[in-house]
Length: 337
Ligand SMILES: C[S@@+](CC[C@H](N)C(=O)[O-])C[C@H]1O[C@@H](n2cnc3c(N)ncnc32)[C@H](O)[C@@H]1O
Image (spheres, rainbow, N blue to C red):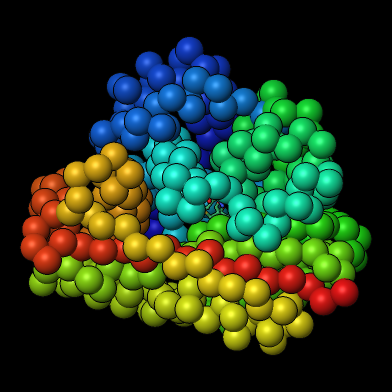
């Protein structure tokens, strides 16, 4: 068990300085052990937005091996919600946008151009939603997350953030949204919870509304060291009741909740390549493993003090022949008319 930090003190420690742009860069430079992602550094000076609701059920943080995690007892989500993780998610957002050449599947663009109501489930720091809200000022955006990572002061005028849990009833009427996005939930849901979340998404989607899911594959291509690390990561997921290859099961799951499957856009990243985008994904995967440290040290058979050394080796081995590859998939569906 980790040490508890009260929400108030965590907000004071994390959110207040985080939302003050000038102190953010200085503070993170001092605090972060991870090398800054080029895109996250650029974005960090402008990340400000506001929360419209505060749910009293939002719980305290738990500190594990120096990182702050949510303390929501019935959630299996196993990445932190501290400022290092926010940096990672912001950097990852811009890498994903470059990999998929945009924030949304092209089939959704005409809906956005007309003016639409959009929900981002598990919005984290709200980067996807604020990026899209700036691109489509005629649309109305809602971001929900059970953790308070999203900005709390200034936001684009067409964005609202709420605390909510997708496994409980979302605070929206049936048939509200033209488009629902849900990204990187593979470490957030148990296998059987996917259907609960997708049913709720189906409920709040309008007939004809689109659902976009983005999930990744596993570290299952690379040298023996990378395969060993990938295998351990998958074992931890399975022990937590999670499905490592959920990205490839979304078609079946969508169909089970009466969302018509449209397409799967699967793109590989090449972690041994030296171009900027692939370097960004190498940075991301190393920092995902870093964020998961408290859950990996035991299975890896190392003590926390040896983890930085392990991470350096992991980064090095990803670049060695045959070169590690990491697949990311966008699955698109539509609620029938
Ligand atoms: C890996 S992060 C991805 C954040 C964001 N979608 C992005 O791509 O940058 C997963 C997010 O889902 C949130 N989350 C996990 N389980 C949730 C649930 N049951 N309901 C709402 N949010 C949840 C976490 O707090 C976290 O912010």
